[in-house]
Image 1 (cartoon, one colour):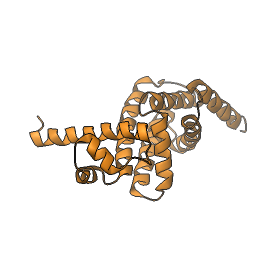
Image 2 (cartoon, rainbow, N blue to C red; image 1 turned 45 degrees about the horizontal axis):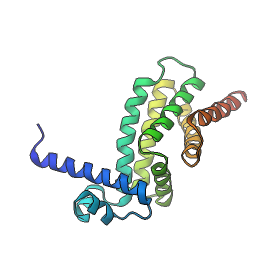
Image 3 (tube, one colour; image 1 turned 45 degrees about the vertical axis):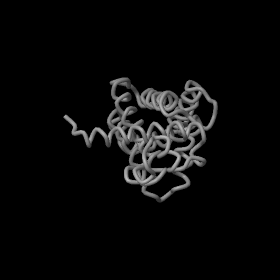
Image 4 (cartoon, rainbow, N blue to C red; image 1 turned 120 degrees about the horizontal axis):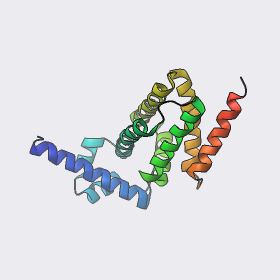
Length: 187
């Protein structure tokens, strides 16, 4: 059983994350400050800094939480046996559905912008590590880590187009399927 202190910490973390998600969606990442997040969460800005370091740290914690849920979802719904094309498109579909149903496209646009703006930072390295976990999940299904990394890069390119547009999941997956088919026809 968790101690009272640990439960209070968990409650504060949850309040900070919920406040940040609401503020990022409403005001945008750039217009939201750590002080805004703290006030909305009912904690001090020092508490936010102690738990997450920076505003980007809060955003990355949201992504980490979302990615943990996504990894569980991928394990549950991906086909056990499928060719690389089918598996890669199914993998991408789950990522895009999860983005729409979870943090939402607006937040994902903010994530991409924050990671690009903070290239070389600890937050960007954390984001790369999260992507690495997704690559590993794909590699386990494909049993080919180098191919999984290349396929994930293509998925990521289509994901970026997806979250920065009003493209449907089906249209994005159709485009990915065309990309993969064109590449596979080169061999």
